[in-house]
Image (cartoon, rainbow, N blue to C red):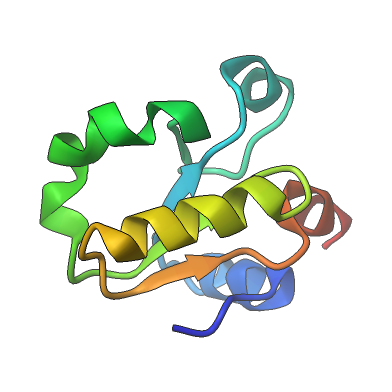
Length: 99
């Protein structure tokens, strides 16, 4: 699945869409600033949270971190676990904040 740009995500949110967004940053990073509607599951916690995410396996899931590195790992991991529509937010939270 191709990644998503911050512009596309902003446009979709402004149109009233509520995509599933997973913030794989640490909890303290999420507390400092977050994308509206994003749930925080730090990258190292993903394996233990898989059962909670099972209903999302065939739905679009957008993952993000600060700049993109951890989200790239999260996308690869979730894809290996059978998720079929995982997209990385290009440039991460930093790009999202810039609009």
